[in-house]
Length: 119
Image 1: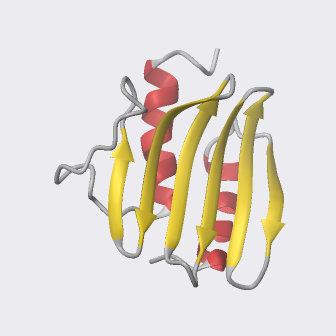
Image 2 (image 1 turned 135 degrees about the vertical axis):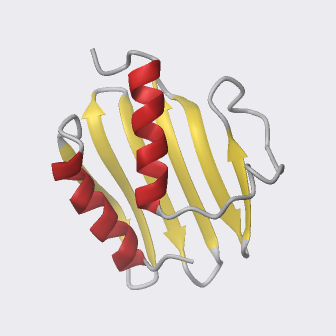
């Protein structure tokens, strides 16, 4: 389980590791919660929500108002919304894999490149 500061550190690191992220927006932040976006361009961003007391994590790649890919955790149980079928809750072994925000951003990088969303 990542803490709020860990997610913010991963987001700040992504700004230099992935040159297509142009800005980190903190939409909501407290000691035990955060909602942030890593903006690529208008309508394309990665969003992270973390609420430590609720043991809730949501990571999502959003394009044109739609989730393309996501990983969610509630009380230690993860599931995935894989690209290609983002409405489906994948609870297979691969879907249940716990990830850090940095891990998720590496997965997003592959999706952005394979879908030609960076052009």
